[in-house]
Image (cartoon, rainbow, N blue to C red; front, top):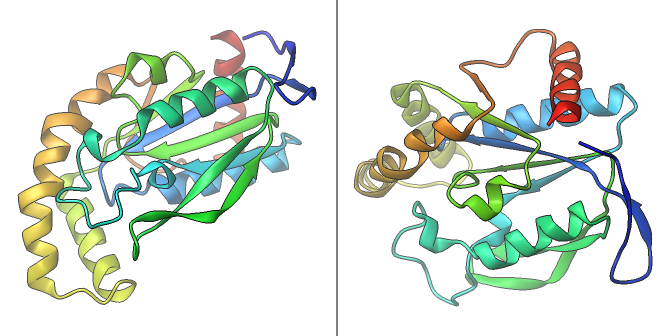
Length: 213
């Protein structure tokens, strides 16, 4: 990929960043892998930012019936934001409030740095999204492991009842994984079951791969 200079809408000239997607089932470790890569890229002297697809839930003002399907997300805004980054312009990432189910007034500013990591469930759901990513990672983790991780997380971090966790997982999360997420691995350029021990070396390989895309 050429590291071209381009004019942003606000008049700022910026580099077109490498965009790297991290996709996998709920509980597969997307955020952990993305954060590890973020640190590794910074060690390599690459200015890096991380965006979560969760920021792009539709602000409907009431609880969604199902958070684990593509229709729950504002793909139009996400596609526009990624296009802005690729053009060398900064973006304002929304902050989704899971209590009010609306967007908060505060936004997170992301500039077109060297590498922008994006992690989420359905990043490979649309061709308009796929075309923006220079590297597409899929975390191919066993569903039983994902369930165990999500079960513990929802109990400890969110104080949810075990039966509620199981019901949501088997009624919504796992069917969404089977229908949308697992088939989307076909779009990945890199598949892995666990984070490599030498994350910095792996990050360097990803940079090389992105440069050839």
